[in-house]
Image 1 (cartoon, helix red, strand yellow):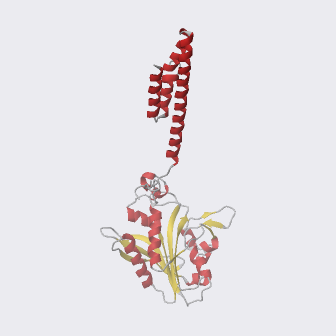
Image 2 (tube, rainbow, N blue to C red):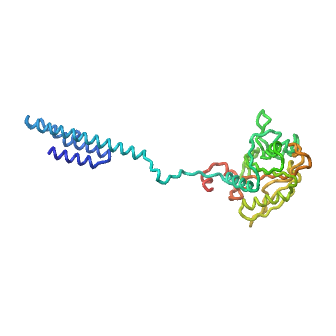
Image 3 (cartoon, rainbow, N blue to C red):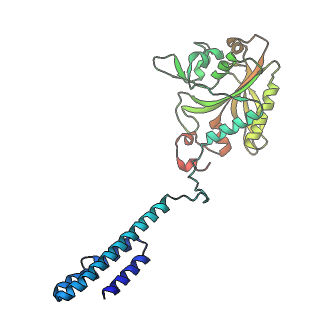
Amino acid sequence: MLNQIRQKALKQIEAESDLKNLEAVYRQYLGKKGELTLILRSLKQMSEKQRKQKGKLANQIKKEIKQALHEKQEKEIKQAKVSKEWIDVTAPGVLPPQGHLNPITLVQRQAEEIFQSMGFSILDGPEIETEYYNFDALNIPKNHPARDLWDTFWLKNLDLILRTHTSPMQARYMEKNSPPLRIIVPGRCFRHEATDASHDFQFYQVEGLMVGSDISVANFKGIIEEFLKRFFSSDVEMRLRPGYFPFVEPGFEIDIKRKGRDWLEIMGAGMVHPNVFSSVGYKSGKWQGFAFGVGMDRLAMLKYGIDDIRLFYGNDLRFLRQF
């Protein structure tokens, strides 16, 4: 009977690979009510001769079962550790979940790509500006009524503001660079406005500037028409209306019309005012150029059919996952 228990136990141990099942094998033979344990407890009822003979064999089998269990457990633990740490470098990778770009980011990247292809450089500028670059250098001197057009955030106890447009980079760039030049300046701007479906205290703008010895309105019209055509991937009608902006003369507003839709104003533009050239040290009458500013929020709303500007800044994943 003892040899049968040994063979049976060793066979079970060899067949098992699960650590929980090996624990069950231990309890079956060596636990408090295990088969071998009960035999060892029954030895006291035998004669001295039988007790010595069976006791020696039972203890030997107990030792063999314990050793076999220990070795098998060590083997399975080692195998489990190797399986966990091993990496199959030939297996296909698992892609991490991808985020979603804000529509304004998509619009900015597309605008940058289009203008770069037409020879424009992309600049960045500070969101905290001086009063000089935001107003004075752009022909908007102190006490000028044109300053009422911008609702400005002034920084307390400092002669600094949150920029109201990206136009200050016109002056900053021209001070350090000579024509011919063509640049765009995308970035965030701020104005003290009430928030509603079409207004926010922050917005994104793309400022454009092209200066040379013979730049005309025709150059502006051709470049903007090409931009709009490529941006909307369709033919777009465009018209220029007279408009007032202190840093350009003449100034005009640009309306567009797409198929099946009404005319809509999308940007302001004009020929750079001589006073702006003078403020950056350009020789009077030698250079001319055009500047324009278009809101990326508005472009994104038109391109993707979005009817509320606040959606861009709400970080609602239900909205962002659509892009």
